[in-house]
Image 1: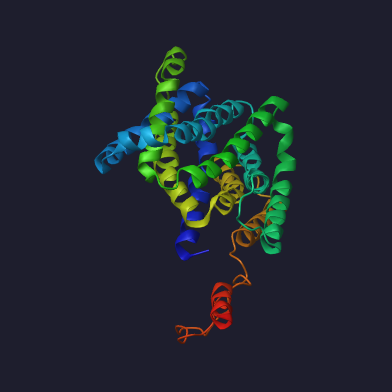
Image 2: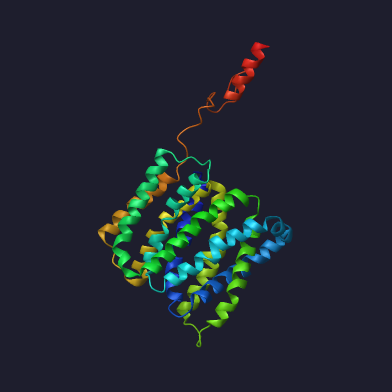
Length: 320
């Protein structure tokens, strides 16, 4: 993976590792619909002006409205509500830990739908190590919530795994802002009425307001721009591997802000998760068998065979 890919990957591990803590704070006083509405409305308010300034937004939406609608439903409308609702009963760290199933689901779905992105032994080993680290972190926390809440988080993970495939297959030509801004606007409109119906009778506390602002500005507007750039840089399967880092960030936030214990098991899982992330996002070990290197740092000599296609061409000219 390129240096730019690693930067985006590391940034996403933080940007989508801290929302669980913010959601947990917000749902103590607000309904899930209100939290999702505020998050989407803030994100849309920040990104929509820039998307409009690029020009051609209406044309883009008309040309790609079907996959954009699918992306909005599978990435935002459904998963954000189920995740937020689940955190009314689950701890923030437990939610973050379960979301780490996204890379495994994404890898399975990519192969099931015939994705050409190769999963070699090194990347499969990385996925396995990451899953092992997630298991070490998850098991002690699974007693904190009911079965439906755990199901809601797993449904969220399923949506998070499918959405990048939609982007990679149908929306790569759509500029990032012109994809995210309309989707967030749609989600805000959908949740506007439920949010109004469940509005609190008293003003939220400063902690809740700060959490909502963080969710909208940092974890939505900024994070989505980085996320789509990461998909375009590394592909859909590698892009979601940053969710292996999310549990580490979620646990660290719990230790720092909620005084949760930092055990030896958690420290061991950090190493597994980071090692798994590195291996799972690694590029192929070498070039394909159809291409032969002609010398590092120099162009091929005139007439030199550099690929299988060139070899066939040479054979054809020889026979003539």
